[in-house]
Length: 127
Image 1: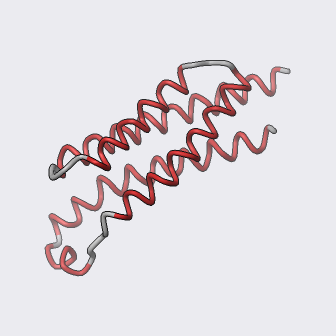
Image 2 (image 1 turned 135 degrees about the vertical axis):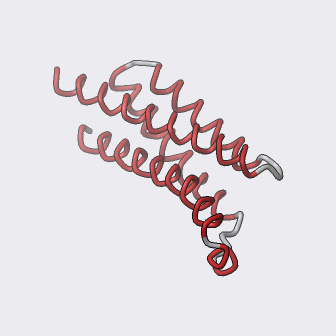
């Protein structure tokens, strides 16, 4: 149980940071390198696929962590992060707002998983 919870939170934290880096780096690269923008056409489905991975992984890790430590704060931050990611993914025709919402959602989700991980570790090793 200890290893699985840490692994789930680790994967979710890594995915949150990867999402944030993607959201920050791609617009900068596209703005700095116009030639790259013509070559790399990232389909909109990429964001939906990433969301399809992030939501169930995060939900599972946060719910399992809550069962271990009982703290609501990681679940609340996680739900906020998922909500912001979903709004960002489906926001029509405003790339700046989409990026901002997605970055905030990724940060909230990573914060939730770090808190979940720390509380789970404390609870598991205190027993």
